[in-house]
Amino acid sequence: MSITPAASRADPDIISLGCRLNIAESETIRALVSGRDMVVVNSCAVTNAAVRETRDRIHRARRDRPQAEIVVTGCAAQIDPAGFAAMPEVDRVIGNADKLTAAAWDSADAVVVADIMTVRATAPHLATAYVPPFSGHARAFVEVQNGCDHRCTFCAIPFGRGNSRSVPAGAVIARIEALVDAGHREIVLTGVDLTSYGPDLPGAPTLGMLVERILRHVPGLDRLRLSSLDGIEIDDRLFALLTGEPRIMPHVHLSLQAGDDMVLKRMKRRHSRAQSVALVDRLKTARSDIAIGADLIAGFPTEDDAMFANTLALIDACDIVHGHIFTYSERTGTPAARMPQVAMATRKARAATLRAAAAARRSEWLASLVGTVQPVLVERPGTRGHAPNFADVRFPAAHPDATRVGDVRDIRITATDGLQLTGRPA
Image (cartoon, rainbow, N blue to C red; front, top):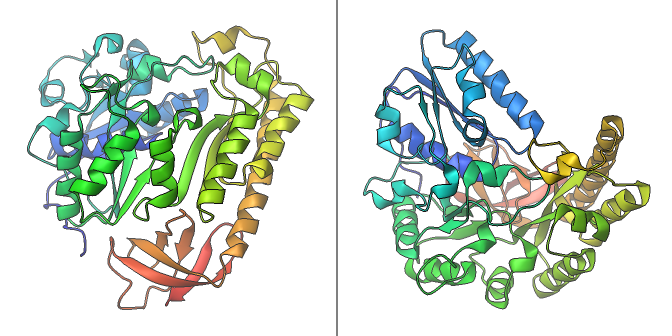
């Protein structure tokens, strides 16, 4: 089944920066502001570079669309509404707690930003009957959790997203059913701290329980993927699903951040290096085709050469083939910003070393997939998609059966350039 096209309309420009949760929320925003001459910048605040990119995109939007209304929302806007409201290019600022409600977009106020720490509701758009389409997207993202109760010393995101809160399973299932009916073969569950799902709901369900209910009540869903997981919160039920349920994609992205115990302690993470290595070993022993992704930070305050070497070695120890490498960035108001800082040149050099090591591991892994047949979700007509393990696959555009976005096609892998796979329909 191909994806149902969105209705023709004069859509505004929606610029979504940062995480998959922002991508999911941007589709709701698109529906809320349909037909308006507007550019919406859904911002990210995970690093100083992300905030700079937000400002750059605002400048560019005003240059490209001089008559349009420029509205900034997202985490950077939530954390610093006054700073963005002061930009001459910006017409309005809308906070994270308000951006999924029609009232905020219909308001005449220049700044609509609530106190995020008082917010208890999650995903208010899921309470409505209308389901905005993921126009042109093969996979659809569904928000099941928002906010974070943990306070990692480097992270400002809780101040942009608030405390952890979960979406009731019924609303999640109804949303997924509608998306599957619209033709989406793959759904990605998203959240700020996905594995903390449930304790605020009646009966305190877990993420594993939610996944079980989704699979049971939406039999038409072919592929379910989970976004970033905190390994310390993967319980036996979720582990069994990740390793034994064929409809869950064999791709586990872990929020590791570092491979040195002292750095992890100073980050206020809740796991040790040994626990990360043991978890990956258990996952890959139970399901050998699981591909491991991870977030790693280079140059955290007080990190010396030996500490960095432990993080570098984690790439091989945990077989990380989807590495997301971040150069440490001081975020105002966070404890880590007050710690002794590593020189910026050293941070950048260490980040480059981590990226090179992750790229080498990825290249080796991709080479091992040559000769296999991968069921690829078509994301660009007849040219590109992702395998279940999230390997990027390119294939010929001329094949008549591999041209529709949203189809799943068996592709025989014939080669790799170290970054992606190439193949032909099997």
